[in-house]
Length: 457
Image 1 (cartoon, rainbow, N blue to C red):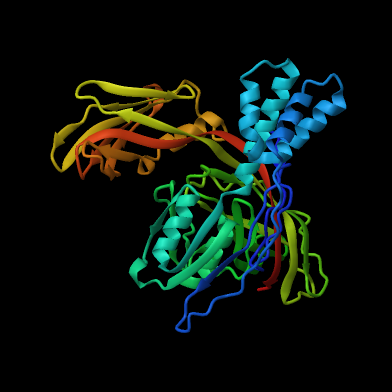
Image 2 (cartoon, rainbow, N blue to C red):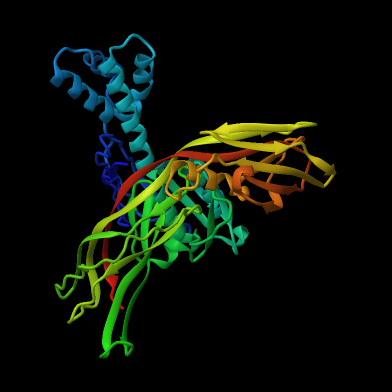
């Protein structure tokens, strides 16, 4: 699997965002401001950038026509321009792909569509919201809805949150969420394994703890703690001292926009304290996987080297985070039958639900995943799909009356040739439909890391 470079979209809390080419896609960002409303009704200053002009439809059509040129340079220059046009070129490219094409034209169109989709994934959603004196819950609901997720408040009373005013137009999601975290004290919860399609928010969450944040398109990186430990072992022939120095950080993705992530060992290319010491360790350790993180916040460590004459802050910390991310969302949608079993297949994995039984208020059914022979491989695409299907807390039940409810506990299990079977309970109405979002592909990314002025322990 080829690792794709991830170019900059926007950075940090400075408030000024510069639109930069992202995987050959050019996106524009307009003025925005997010502010709390105090007794005087004052607001924070607004940051702005200029908008980029989109190519005209005639220009896009001309580039598509040039894909049939007998000259290599014309064909491939046109292909690059179409990729750079981004979403504006997608309808015309799809229309051309369904018409009369040459083999290479089909290849270039498909490659361009993949690049644009990849850029959209990395860029993340852009938020537009213009509201004054609204409740923080309304703000979170609107921002998350535009990002394709749902806020889930834990240990917070939405009614006690302050009123906020938001003026944002095409602003990256995490920049708005960072401002809301500052204003309300509410931000994503680390290590919470609830519904993986929801963004779980708590007081003093991941954004609230870190004084620094690095926004990389659809992802945000924030340090959570910095530790230094020195120990002496007497188990060898002579006492030997060891020391460890690392940063525990959080990588935030958007539940519902992407699926489970595997976070690998961070690669540090530059780390310098304010005394000029290099903190890059020559022995970063073994490759470490953060598992299939499904809650939108993945914790990971950044190993560093403790200097002889340490400074007080890490002035620069640069590198990248290798991540395997799940994308290409599909909906598993099964309708309950009065008798018998309803089933569907996702990439060769069969999923079924039995007919429902029970009475008003509590209903029961059986949920089954049929694993193909030899499916288990922790890093395979198929196993990643099975892991998601196994997360019944991400399923949604639509009742006969049209209500949306979630499962109310399940038990059972068991694997092997018979697959996995669960006995599921549902409250709140008679089940009519079973839905679950499943991400069917995995992509390797390199998410850049660029943090500054982190206090030394």
